[in-house]
Amino acid sequence: MLEYVERKGTCSSKWDGLNETFGADGLLPLWVADMDFRVDSHITGAITDYIKTGIYGYYVIPDSYYDSFIEWEKNEHGLSVEREWIRYSPGVVCGFNFALQVLTSPGDAVIVTTPVYYPFLHAVTNNDRRLVCSELVNREGRYYIDFEDFENRIISEDVKAFIFCSPHNPVSRVWSADEISHILEICRKHGVAVISDEIHHDLVFNGSVHTPTMSLAAKNDRLIMFTSASKTFNIAGLRNSFVVIRNPEVRAEWDRFMTGLRLNMGNPMGYIVSEAAFRYGKEWLTEIREVICGNYEYIKEQFALHLPHVVMTPLEATYLAWADFSYYFSPEEIQPFMQDKCRLAFDYGSWFGGDKSGSFIRINLATRRENITEMVNRIITEAGCRL
Ligand SMILES: Cc1ncc(COP(=O)(O)O)c(C=O)c1O
Image (cartoon, rainbow, N blue to C red; front, top):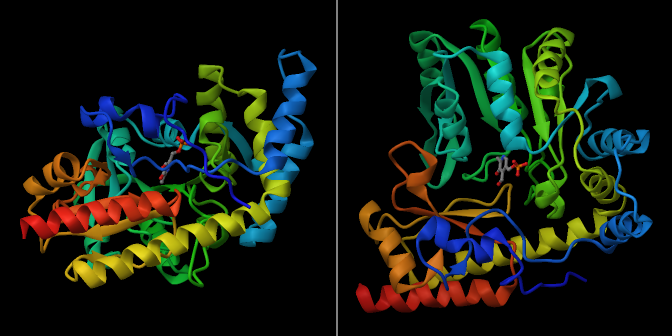
């Protein structure tokens, strides 16, 4: 049984870090992708055992950690990963920042498909690469890649790398095997390296099936896959993620770069919780998936009744709902309405790049129903007063 935890006052960035991002406190937080539920008891058990040893010296990563990931990928996603392909990164975001440095040079063009998880955009510009955006096509709330535009931009901008979000945050899209194959084919044809962020791969819904990019790639494709147990099992604070590189040349380039940083080992607790999550977290994951789906359906139902022109993107993956309020609010109006009138904190569409999502919000669904009901009521009531 999932246990909701009151997180205010626990140094939670979601609850206690509002001021830094929104310039205000006391908002009901439905923004950053962090859950409000206690982790599976096997995870707390494993970390407690470690803490009780009273020794926190340098650590040797056990084989069982790698095995738990290899088994998870095989059983959950049908992906065969070999031990020697796996590397460590203290997070997926810093991982794809490293990958840009490994796979591209300053000034190189890097493509993303917008709207997309905004650290992709920042990674490109912060590393002095050139940002090229191919806008996803929104058809009644569901999003599609415009392959022609994607390829044309690769050619005209001489793109060297693509940062792929699969499943896609914020548009909740699980890309089909055909779509992924098409992307790989275009990238291969034009010598574009692929950085595939698959952190949301376990959180898929409504019959969708995640296809790992690597399962469709050729052996010599310049591909780096990133994933983690962190989003799936709510352990992101422990900074442990997996880098999978099958191409030996790319692996050697990665290793050379990481050796320069001396970043070959993380905090022991990150390894311990990731392994416990993969080995024992399945039941907890089933429960959290039900909560996420239930919250999504509730919001969709309520908006359909009271604000029928809100377009909710279908929930295929992630615990983040993507809602289009453009019928009701201009891009300039949405944040003042949600923040000042409703006292709510969301990730706003304009953060995610492209120019078509200014009136969207991204809603974090991984909280208790009372918070979701409160959020919906505030929006409906305030919107009712205003419209
Ligand atoms: C697509 C995507 N990648 C990466 C992350 C964060 O990864 P990390 O905390 O491991 O840096 C998130 C968090 O929401 C995400 O949505």
